[in-house]
Image (cartoon, rainbow, N blue to C red):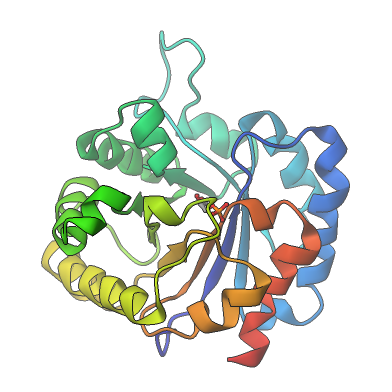
Length: 254
Ligand SMILES: O=C[C@H](O)COP(=O)(O)O
């Protein structure tokens, strides 16, 4: 946690979910109304195909809808891509950019992620800018160096606490059940906050820095209590309302 920063629990549904999943989304919306929304903001980043319906289901709930990626351009000849403006039109308030799965599967560079963050702002969306080291980079003792390089390349200098959220996701912790120690998370997040100050100045002290990678109800209290951890980016555990809400519940305990 960071004093004065309101936390955010964000779900990333990745390539999961159809219309049959709308009941689960509604259950997350209903669950957040149970006083949890007084302590924590909530976001569900669903597949583009589900965004409009999800936004409708969440319209009266304290949960925002978001996309998982956007093209840097507003429109044009880019078959299969979706622009930030299209996500906004479908009901998104946020969009994830630079998730490690996009960086790996689609060869997205820091420069592309930077352009996507600016595209998100152009459309009036908040960008959730993802960074994180691989297992090999961690083993080589290069974690902080990698984070510095990704931040410098991916975060535009005019990022603010209102238009951007940073998500630190160690690639080796995603979907594996493995998590860094609380000390390692604290070290990474403190480093990210310090590096951000060199990019965005005083805004660094107000920006949310989420932790992502195998966050579950069972480890949420420990991880969310770490200094400079201002919420979570949750994959697998966000697909079930009970698990998503169980993670948000951590904020009743810390
Ligand atoms: O965007 C979410 C992350 O990739 C974390 O996924 P996970 O919670 O399934 O490990």
